Structure formats: structure tokens, C-alpha cells
Length: 110
Length: 110
Image (cartoon, rainbow over the protein chains, first blue to last red):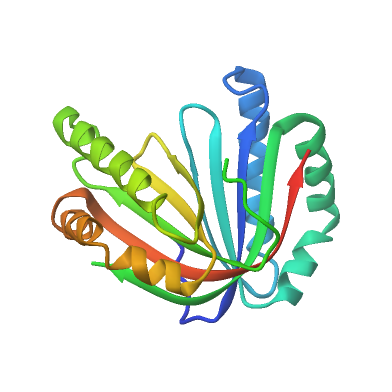
């Protein structure tokens, strides 16, 4: 899904479970906000790509890729993203875990 | 989902799209093999946990966590896992990307 360059680069692994999962209004608001965040992240210098999946039970994993820690820091403090982070804690997520990792090697098939 | 210790530790980010997705016999065979691989991985010394999600379109992300590169190397060459890797390329995946990354920090909510 994400076409990333040769390592090294940085991955943000965001594992989460939605709150109010399956409620149509909440799901629509979430999907709109998540789409907006993907658009906005792509405007940050050093953004490399994003991959996302969500199971039928509301468990999701999103991995975003970045050239550097500096790029991640800029994304973390973007005002619109800060608002979304607050909504994430108040409304959207029952729980999440966020891990920052340095990608050291990669291979693909086919 | 995965209860991991304080970083550092190693993450294997496996992004993929299923082949023959939605065909009942293929899905059942895949689910059985994937469950067996999760059981087997958990027996490898240095295994820390696994998180997985798959969207309705067949796109999946599985992240497994390990104490060390040595643990990953042992898992990679386990005979039953080698057989599963071959089936993955011949039958189960339209494509995949596998990235190995060193987790440097983590935070969780709530």
C-alpha cells in the first residue's frame, strides 16, 4: 500500500480499538476525520506513506512512515492534528497503543 | 492487544493483501494456518506478542513483537513456518511487504 524508500526510515505503529463502533453517525464522523488526517499528514515534509486496516470487531492498525523524527514531531504538533488527538481520546478510541520504531530492513512480494 | 515491555524491542510489520479473498474454502484454510502460526510463534524464546487486523477488502496488517533479532531469526527458519511462508507466496497473498523495525518508544491510552 505504502511505497516506501530503502530503509532506514521511521514507522509509527498505531494499534487501536474504536469506541461506539458500528454506530452509523459515529462511524461516519470518524471516517471523515480519519480521511482528513491522512490528507493533512501527506502535506508534512518527510511524510512517506500510510497503511491502514480495521477488522469487523473494530480493532485497527495504522502504520505511517516518515523520513525522520523531526517529521513526526511536526505532525504531532500540527494544530488540526492536536484537535483530532483530543477527539480520539474523548470520543473515538476505547484504547490505543502508539509505538515509534526505526525501520531497518524491508522486503516485498512479489 | 499485545502487552509489550518497555522499549527497546523489535517489531515485524507485515502488510499484505489476501489472494482468493472471500472464497470460503481458501479463507478457512488460511485462518487455520494463521492461527497455527500464532500458536507456534508464541513458543519461540523472545516472542513478545502479536497484533493483527484485516479489512473487508482483504488488506491486512500483522505486527509481531520480539525481544531481539535472534528471536526473529529463529522464527524465520522454523521448519513449519518455512512451509507456511512458501504457501503464503504460492497461495495466500496477492502481495505483501515485511518491514523489521526497532521500537524506540511507546505510549498507550487510557
